[in-house]
Length: 88
Image (tube, rainbow, N blue to C red; front, side, top):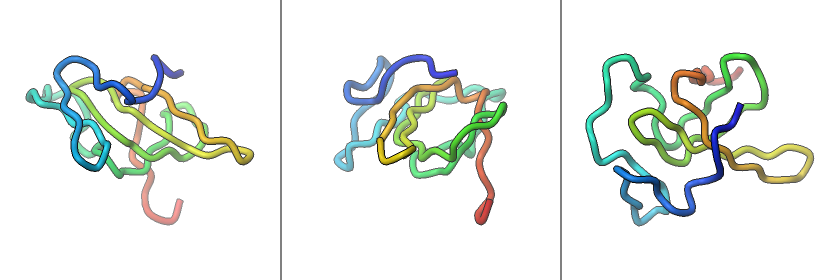
């Protein structure tokens, strides 16, 4: 389930990059997934569409996806996502 909106304004402890993606400016904790990075394709652990990660913080991932011709943006706890293998 989404936490909040897109990464139009970076949350605290993130910095905007020239390519309009947000990155964490702090260190990540060991229990947070390290393979969830901007550009990764992910899916919620309980299912749903494949999404593209557009930015991350220590505990959140900002994601976008297209569904029925509409682009959606949402923020998820990184622990609730898994990376989608190529071809899935």
